[in-house]
Length: 136
Image 1 (cartoon, rainbow, N blue to C red):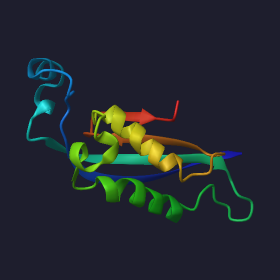
Image 2 (tube, helix red, strand yellow; image 1 turned 120 degrees about the horizontal axis):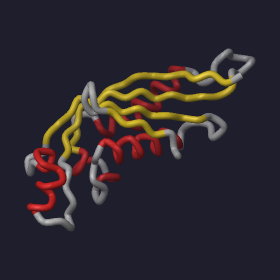
Image 3 (spheres, rainbow, N blue to C red; image 1 turned 60 degrees about the vertical axis):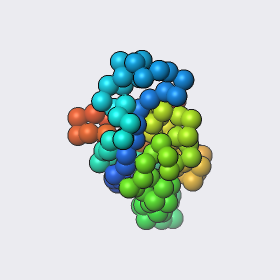
């Protein structure tokens, strides 16, 4: 029997959407106000879900405290109140779109969760705009 356990978290971060290999006109045409040279920020919300078998000894799929600590260490501490373009190494050459951010977060968390368990990350950039990644 598989069960999904989820934990919500949040972080605040700034970013700028642009491609270094494009000119200003093309960046503005594609990314609009998100290409602001002075960056802009979001109050990101995320849900991390882990699906697996219930451990017969503990009754847990995963100890929620362990999941909380993983999210804190892999997402909140490195991303919160940071400029994603400048402060997070994964985005040195990767445009920090919501799609790319959710994949980076998933990869950071994946390495800390038992491979037998499936994980899914849902990242809200705004209350109405969100992306989901399951590692596929």
